[in-house]
Length: 457
Image (cartoon, rainbow, N blue to C red; front, top):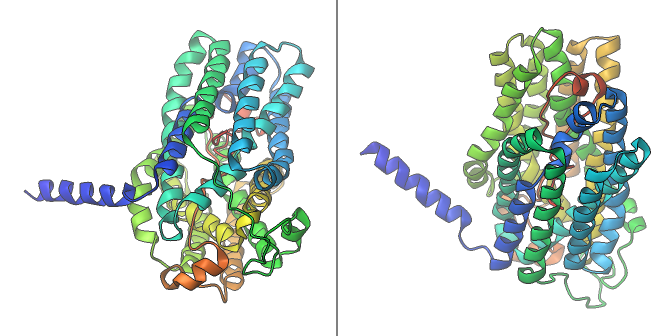
């Protein structure tokens, strides 16, 4: 009887979590899931280059870096496009460009051509993130955005988990089939957006927003860069990203030094995806009415000291326990941190603000491997985990200071929502990193797979 009661409570909780959201959101959510189900390139690029094409691990690392650099370049441009031309046109352009470039990449054989097209794939596949995030903020009421962004983040992880397993079987048959399959799924995603997702860009009124920024052509990249509080959030986002990405660039190296294999790392890191899929919805219900400042402080400390605990790990089981700690931090931090971005963004500047925010994660994806390599080589893995703990403490203090004077999630009034154009909201993580490590090349060269790189095109 108790089991039945528990199942009933879980069913009611799930129904409450998914109910009341606009139909347009669910079509956008569907496009996200379809896109992630087709992910292949970011997951298997390193194996494709080293095993199928016979290139060196160093070259594979260069291609991965160029793919990430493409995301850095496109973040700002896509943000401007989102505000200037609209959310829907930007997503469609990004998705069509991704489909074409991914298909072309599968046929490239010359190393220079592969590297160049990989850069274009990185640009195209990352270009829709600001548009997706801005559209969710546009179409979902402020009081429901925590649920909406968390559900979208859940779709990313669910799709990533399914596609990683399925793409492994495809790769055994034909890597080219994987490239063509991702291109086809991306086209399906574009069709869903074209047929079912309307434009959501707020109409320009010509008057000033609550922050004093003119609504008509008043928000430029220079405006964002002069926004001191927002750029402080971007800086803290960069710090948080450096911490989380060590799970996929520093952790496999440390586990290898302890005599553990790549399959051991794969087993341990799988805990991350399983927990996110299992806990995202119940955690969302818990955090949606909590003070975002406290949640950001707690999640920063959990992230920093979750990695800090890795210094005590010497077996797969203990490593998995530390992953549990920082995965909880990820589940909390991803929605709430990015909700702060929405809260600080004028409605007509959401694309540019989201683009600059996405840039912090793309830049961290380039810096994290260098950070882990230098620290481990010169000081040892223990110092890397101590550095993560220090960074988590710094981020916690930074969030506490930056959010002074902002309304808490539990105390946002209707007038405040109208004034700032957003309340407590979240975006798809753009950018939390997940990797599937196979072989030693990724560990030695920093070749990595990120959720940010593989996020909805």
